[in-house]
Length: 315
Image 1 (cartoon, rainbow, N blue to C red):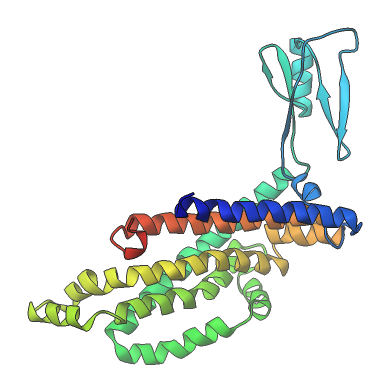
Image 2 (image 1 turned 30 degrees about the vertical axis):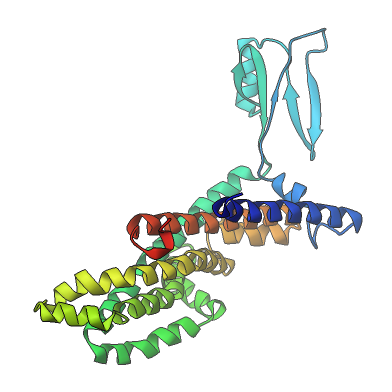
């Protein structure tokens, strides 16, 4: 197996093994749900089960199958328009396939989790955009004027040292608990420092020989910036973006723990945990993890497209 395939399949196989081990240990030791739900109970809040009805055999045309206290209605044989319309309105039937009924069982909390995830994702991306722009702007300013670097760097370190637990209530008080901008501000502060410090490192750590060559050609400061410093800073900038992608979801969700609209993912998790629906809360956490991984992969793809010349991506 090639090295590239090993990098893909190794984490997948480890993940599958851990999930099976998790399920087995929880079952074997009879661990209570409020301590650690089974993976099957967690995914039961998200997955969809499709059942295609077979041909009608006798007068027993309706059967019910229970799955986690929810029911799938399977109607063998062709559906009359009236029955089909009734089932579709009730949410039991999604579509008909070749005259056979197709019943779709959605995860019990799939719809609210997806709605809450989309709401929180917009907060995370909005804060990430503002934090990235602010970090790049400050890095460019400190590169151009060294006095600015000495003046702004302590403030950037102080902002990075501020815990979310102390900062979130202040932002909620400034902008309002239900205002998404309060969570965006939290994300902005969290990702500002890694973006700024990585970009600054790339801007100032240019090769001295390349800088001397640009000066020998009488290049202006703007030409040195756009043709030498910024290309040199792109790998460091993307390194900061990879860190920021994970921090953005963390900041948005933790900020919602201190108050927010009911549709927010952090509020959903706290409410489900307060009602002892821990499998549903874990399902929401799983979706948040998948969103964080997706953001990382998007940034990685953008890095490959923007830096095809970088040694890391050379075959």
